[in-house]
Length: 484
Image (cartoon, rainbow, N blue to C red):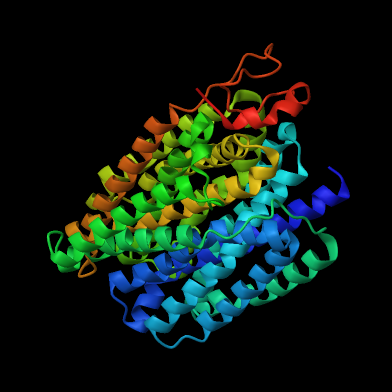
């Protein structure tokens, strides 16, 4: 790894570290925020969803801005927006102001995250990309590992507002180093797909609104049915629009590649299961076990530590074994782990009864993440990696929004916050929902292309995975986006 690659990978990982630390620390502090701001479970859900939804719908735009105006410039600007929005979160005195500030954080993150993945993908050749992505996720794992503990320390020892003040020094350092050490680069200079952005934003908002309001307003109410029907209709309209758009934000032809068409929905469901779990875990330990934020954060650390330890290993092995094995196997482990928790959590199970399942599920998620990323960016032509990265990140975050909405809807239908017993019943039901999401994702991942025999030097026109030795086929790289 040369100096240019090291700085690019390091700063992309630092940005991802910043976003991951924020998400995990906020998750641990949710119970404290709920009590301090007198927030309902629906309002608490929007503290998470406002960020994720804004991030998801603007990710392709962030990738397009980077390709057009310069990836370093937009990456640094996104860090600045995220940092300023974090300060606004810290200064919020009501749940409404906090939700709005979280949405602004999502705008900044949408400018940073797809470009961080693009920078890593562009700096490393295909045969080294899996290892680089594993290191990228491993550094992110430092934030994932420390996030619950940091959140617990802040929520219990200081105040939840310091969750957001943490982003100020990290953001300033990342901006300065980016401008000094990262070379400017651009992708295809294409126009913005304003129609696509509007359609996917409103469509996603309609579906999420229906899921959030279902229990409170009634699943058969006019409000919920209208939001759901309108949301689905707008998503369909988005697909039709993208097929005809001159400069689409998400070219539908990408889905002709089997790796792209299967790894993306599998990863969508993987993150749906992850975010649905993450939303409730710290609250479960605080509400049912009676732990404070600090102890709850400590109890989560074995679960989050797995990402830091296993991600680099999984990334390297994916280069040798193939992506499908890791995505399928990882989602199977998540299914088994969360399924066990769903069975025992409602009975007042002790922490040691839950710990093995948490570790198994986290190891599975860690196996699947870098492999899915590698499959998606390897399914398109090199100059289209920015668009593919944006699409991958968008669907991933949409998965998180969907997973939280589904888990909260199931939780609200089976339990609540009135007593530890009621919360435990709702939590068990919610874990059953995330188990089902992981299982469906595993079934989808079975459709991913398998590893080719080592003797095959170049793929036939129908192949969509990355060839082990790409040089002989480099002039024919446009064929990598096709499949039979």
